[in-house]
Image (cartoon, rainbow, N blue to C red; front, top):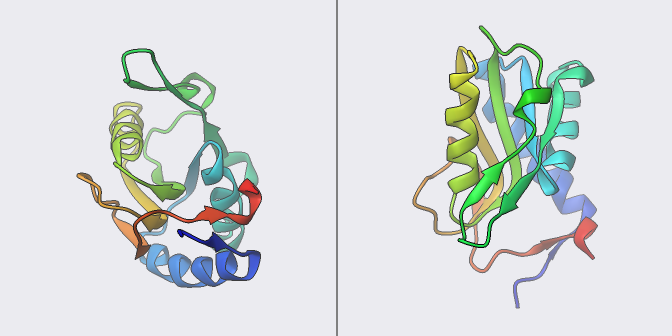
Length: 142
């Protein structure tokens, strides 16, 4: 059984994650849709980042199994920005890695990645609260 991350546990994880992010002084938070939007909103609030820079990047899986990231065209100019890309959980890290690369291509000064829970990934996010396999569900997924 992989379990469920409760609302209280979610906020405890945020309490652990945010201090790890503060030294980087990010000014933009990007959340990977869907679960990353919850994380992005709370991270931005706790870091004092204006809500206008919290965006969701929808991700799609094609018939060939490739992952595509949509929505970068909706981002404001990232030139010179310090971006943190967040998600609730990561299994392979592919979307985090690809999003980081795209954000850098769009002019960000820095782009770091963070997840609350990571499984065994080839690409390890810059910031992880904990590792767990299999990944649990979050309360908003029920």
